[in-house]
Amino acid sequence: MRKPVIAGNWKMNKTISESIELVNGLKRELIDIQEVEIIVCPVYTALSDISDLIVDSNIFLGAQNVYWKTSGAFTGEISPLMLKDVGCKYAIIGHSERRKYFNESDQSVNKRIKAALREGLTPIFCVGETLEEREANKTTDVVKRQLSEGLEGLEKEALLNLIIAYEPVWAIGTGKTATPEQAQEIHGFIRSWLVENCSEEVAESLRILYGGSVKETNIKELMQQNDIDGALVGGASLDSSSFVGIVKNSLG
Ligand code: PEP
View 1 (cartoon, protein in one colour):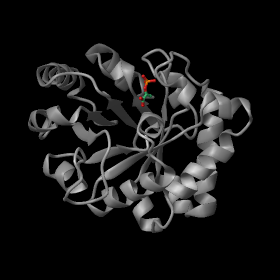
View 2 (view 1 turned 135 degrees about the vertical axis):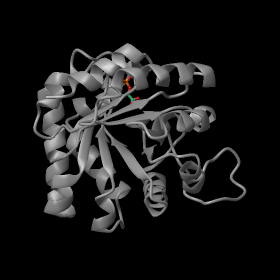
View 3 (view 1 turned 90 degrees about the vertical axis):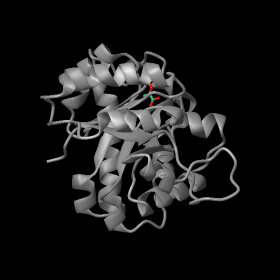
View 4 (view 1 turned 120 degrees about the vertical axis):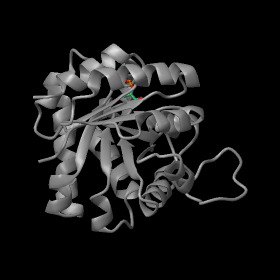
């Protein structure tokens, strides 16, 4: 059985005090939920305070990116060791906004994934096609390339500690959600790719999240699909009641 995951990607939003307020609300409302792995990914400046706040709770901490070196002259970057040090268990890697605005490539995503795994962080590895690519019938080619290059050289055992997020770029922040069937088609494709290129064991146990305008009102249907194991949530994770609603509605 794959434990469902609901992860909030706060992107570049919220001051420290706003982050604390949001997490206090989540803690109050979600205290009894053990059936879902709940993750929040605040901005770097709030990580330390949020880490203290969620110690011993059922909410876990993730970062929004990670660099592949441990330390050194890399102005503006943050290492896996530093994220572990502040209490992160997860790191989002290869988000389409990083690929688009900061020129991250499949190769640099691969280095980040390897470095995160080495340090014991669980990568939330994002893949997904643009609208242009979908309209040109290239969705599976794009996702296949992102998977094979992003996971290049990784041992099968290491892949057991990975989460994949399928996020069609055209559905991120646009209010346009992929239909459950559209999402399932690509989730199923990803799981088959894992069977062929990794192992049955990896394919069976690895969680594949859907991301792209997930809301309280559409999570249930998405979660009913065989290969959808949770969600990576952007906009709707910034509001306590909507994120709580998504977590609760994700339960069977
Ligand atoms: C995201 O940024 O990962 C995301 C899915 O955003 P949104 O939920 O706002 O579409």
